[in-house]
Image (cartoon, rainbow, N blue to C red; front, side):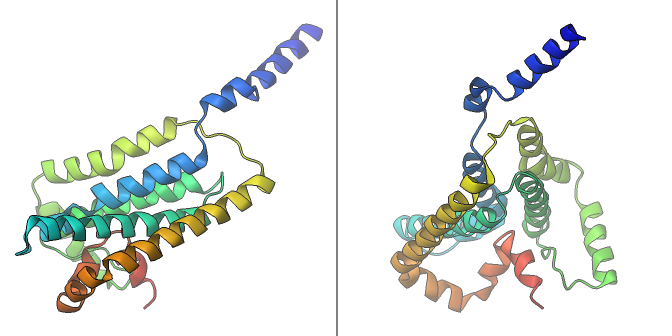
Amino acid sequence: MSLRLFHVTEFAQSMLSPADQREARHPAQLLLWASLWLALTGNLPLWRELVRLPMDGGSLLWIGLCFGLLTTAALGALLSLLNWPWLLKAVITLLLWLVALNSLLLWAGHGYLSANLQPDKVQAVWAQLRALPLWQPLLAFGLLAGVPSVWMGQLSLRRVALASRLPQNMLLLLLFVCLLGLVWFLGKSALLPLLQDQPRWLELLSPFNTLLSLRH
């Protein structure tokens, strides 16, 4: 009995040891990595359309940088509100597969997944996916969602007490909102004409195209 108790205690200490905690990643790191990945790789159709604009290289680079930072900051703010141990990985996984689906559809010239789709439209989306060459869905879902989902599932996150996690989340939210405001202030003169002339840009911005459709 004493030997078994020793092994149980030793196991518990190893799970809660400071060394394990130091090796584990802070949830804020996962949040930042996920925001960058979703913003950059999850919006390939948007970057393709930006490159096609009849602008000089400097203007394209500035507009692309603004779009990238705005999307990253908005995703970071959203994930800061959902940065809880039982929720963060699940939300990121859902967003990964959503942006992979939207990227695949938009790249092929179809629409994005909208909350307002009627049942017949859902069938049309499914038909569009089936009509694509097999390698395209495999590549999109595999690289954009599958690989990061597997990596994230194996990632060990540091345990943060609720009393510390709440103020950390609020600080992260404040930082991302400030970044959002700063980038918009600096880049609105270049972005506003583009958004006014072609409102479809927002339809290319995943996952917010789908999330914003929930309002209707």
